[in-house]
Image 1: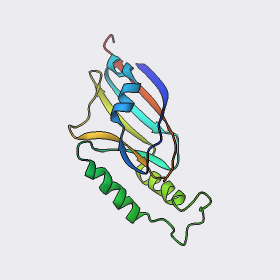
Image 2: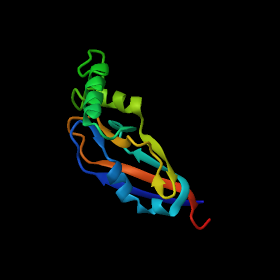
Image 3: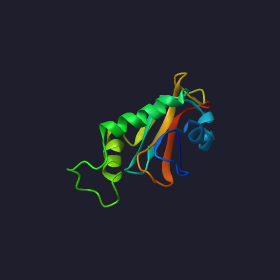
Image 4: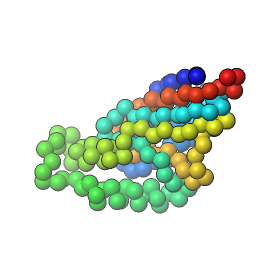
Length: 144
């Protein structure tokens, strides 16, 4: 069993759902060494999240943003955690709904995703800033 791990910083993204598959895969070329394995992508933040979904049509990402904003609105009168602005508490709720990590199967050195699947950075803050990801891959190498 072989393990690889690295931490990367993504640039600031505007609020919304952003396809980051290429950035993640470019950051961990060691995946090519794994015959069978797993890549876990973990975000070290509580107001942004990760998910896997449609990688071709950008309207899917804008529909996600519209739906999440309707489902978890800003300025709800019962929010107590409002110190960092009206987008803060909804961002925490949205991040918990989607979660802080995704796992991808690795087959012959490549992520074994469906044709239309990609990794989304889900930025729930208006000004979230740079986001840090921990990439951890493990599995059997071609030499095993």
